[in-house]
Image 1 (cartoon, each protein chain N blue to C red):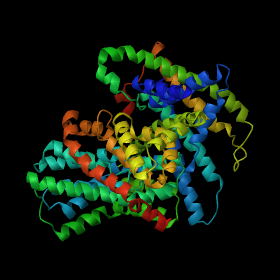
Image 2 (cartoon, rainbow over the protein chains, first blue to last red):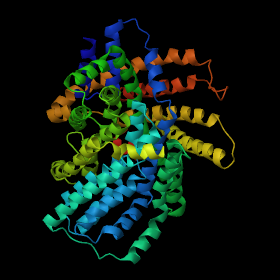
Image 3 (tube, chains in turn yellow, purple):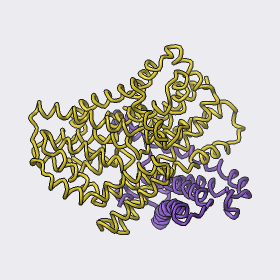
Image 4 (cartoon, chains in turn orange, purple):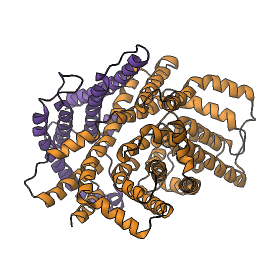
Length: 427
Length: 158
């Protein structure tokens, strides 16, 4: 009865469009009232909510968000795009490949898919349209490539997952590096096939002088991933410290070196970073109350036993979870889903010998695919606003790109070493 | 209301800047000056809690809290008009409940202090929650009070 209350009330509030954070809190209040009656002390809920975000590792979240925003308005995105264009622009469908390369580089600087789509989208879609590409295809390439952002470090969803799953933040950030590069390679291979079939245009011939010139222009921004990933890998900085340095570095580039951001713009970026952080952290803190009560009520245990009854084989359990998350990802915002589901999924993973660090990267990858699927696809909404292409047309154009991304997710499930090798070697 | 919004926005901006400076000062002290500054981590965590809860309050004011609006969108504007007041009242009740729950907690924790700074009360962390949920209550009630106006999202984003 109580277990049904936890799930039923939450789903009902979600469906009624109560904000996710309040739905979590509301369900917790309702079920506690059912359990303990009207005479309970609710102070423990506030205590759980506040202590849930009292974590130094979480400080990296606003820094990652802020760095991405500063880079977008500070002329850094344009420089990275120019560099990628000089590298691979000459091949058939070159601008689409440029987008993937630029996304991989940009992924080393920003922690969210939405900031990657918004930043590169404005530059890439315009450029691709001018060179004769279909608008829908351009938007689809940007959407698919933006999912690389939260897999290659830095990554807001990976940090949130690490907190909820109680795994090493540094470890999971580094673990995302190879999967992120694989996603890039898979998308590039897919684009190459499409480019041949559709006879997409080629760019200007490759010129080493152009590569050198664009590298010189983009050299300082290109150092950001080196600082971030290098700092974490070397163990010199904690992920939060590396994020703070990257945020400060991006500020210096945008304000002092390129002089594209003024004090007023910087203040607005800081304000909007605080809001974006607050919106996510409100869900984290309310999910802490819900997670605590759900665990106490034995719901997690019931789910573990339910899955174990089907199978204990890690591959089958992994496939079941991936299928479940693909459906959830259509309806629930990615970060919110990670926050709510991770505490339930981790015991299931442990019961079937799935490593939470290995499978965490797959969970985030699947949730990033959810950003591309209707009805709740944040990246789709952002690109709809940027490009003016209708949501329906974007959805149809993006759909084929889900195939290479899913193929990478399956590859990672079958070969865990692709995820775990770097943290094992370096951390 | 506009003055209050401006102050809240300025506070959120300032808190982010303070966190960024504090963590970089921590790194500078450790690597360049070779001095351990133990209070920076605890204080930056406290500032982060304020930053997060104030940011959440602004998010509630601007209507940017994450919502799964699939069903209302499918059912059309008529159903949305019926659902919207219900969702607002329910959200208000949840916020008011947690706001009230936080006040005795702030009081009971107030005499204790941070481990590294003995003049900062632990109650400040819980006060961030109270302030945030108090602001959310105010923002929910504001449209009902004559003279108060809910900012349009374009104004809020400007």
